[in-house]
Figure 1 (spheres, rainbow, N blue to C red):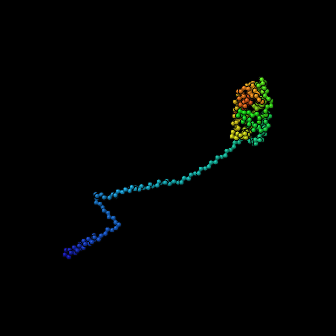
Figure 2: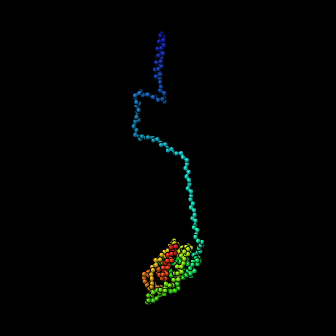
Amino acid sequence: MSKFGLWAIAGIAISTLLYLVYTAFTFEAPTGTTTVVIAPPGLQPIVEEPPPSNLPEIRLQPEPEPPAIAASEPVVETLPVEVVEPEPVAAEPDGPVVQLPNLNDSDGLVFEGLRAFRSGVAVIRLLASDQLVRKFVVLVDNISRGEYPQTGLPYRGIEQEMPVQNIDENLFVMDASAHGRFDQIIDIFVALDTDQAVTLYRTLSPLFQQAYAEIGFRNVNFDDTLRSAVNIILRTPYIEGPYQLVKPSVMYLYADASIENLQNVQKQLIRIGPENTEKVKAKLRDFVLQL
């Protein structure tokens, strides 16, 4: 190679070297870029720990995902249906319906009902002429308390006086014929048909209850009072005569204290005699059993 060629190569090499030196001094790293240093194999990168802090560590928990709602068709509830109870139907009466009069005009119905009895006419002759329902209720109420009224009775009184015999000025004895004054009345009463008597009583029952309310017993069932009255009669003891009497005033009293201390209605039954008393008991017992 000629010298000129050598000098030309040498000049190019020097020019290139000078250019590289100039580029090195004038080079500026571009902003916004990151230099990545690749560590050689076998070396671990050094990670600098942050300086300790006094603030509490806050850890963010991931929010739970909302539960999945199963897709289903909407349920439509059926509204309750109001049940209307049927109105009670009144039972048909066994017999014909009786239109009851008011209490003041009820005597005609009582007499009409008694006339249908086999011995009804005889019974009517023994009864009072008016206010039979009210007088019967008062009598039953008194008997239920052991009393026996002297006035306002539903039957006619016996005009015949009680026959007595004098033992001395202060002591008397009831004559045996005294019981016979009541024989006809008791026989007519006992002859009444019990079934017919119960039917008539049930027909007149609203009037009895109304009359019972008039004398102050608005909340008491008259049927219960009637049963109480019958029970007192049934408890009357059986006492045979003769019965000795005293008369401190107008009325005779039993000389035997065991008799005089009985209830007034029971002393009245002793006056009609033990046989008549037993007939009355049997009839009333039969009546109450069917009531």
